[in-house]
Length: 222
Image (cartoon, rainbow, N blue to C red; front, side, top):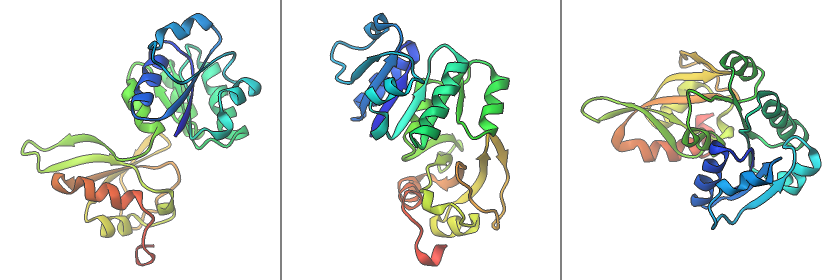
């Protein structure tokens, strides 16, 4: 993947290092060229001096081939504008905006712009949402046999009933997070674009379930 990051502060530089370690190409944008000193000397990505919602700056950073965009500067307004430009102008599906004001974060979440409240989340969790592959384990029972995990679901499951996903995986959909709010589904609930799916699953089957969710459903599962 190619990921564009706006903001090279502590979070932005941590994201850049983490993503590069995972083997992804990274471009970092910051209006202050001295901010790039936070990046490791061996950082091999692109450094672009400029405003992160400026189209020419974004193009220089490779936004036209980007798979994901993170706006993690110190300004809420700049972050949300940049996230919208990345999504609406350049068609980047995986975007996230860092927002300091939790109330504003909730509003933007309901408008369809994924947000990360600074005091509640870490760089690792931002990476998880930029790269929707695999799972994020949220809870395990004391014996370790059962886990509640946020599992990335292929876009091909959108429009499919929750019951079909449960049948295909052998797991239970504990809840959905939709537009920032939790929802208790039943078998007839349709999976919508942007839903975060939280599955209750036997720990020994986690890898199997992740693989099923990441693939398109079989015709019999639609």
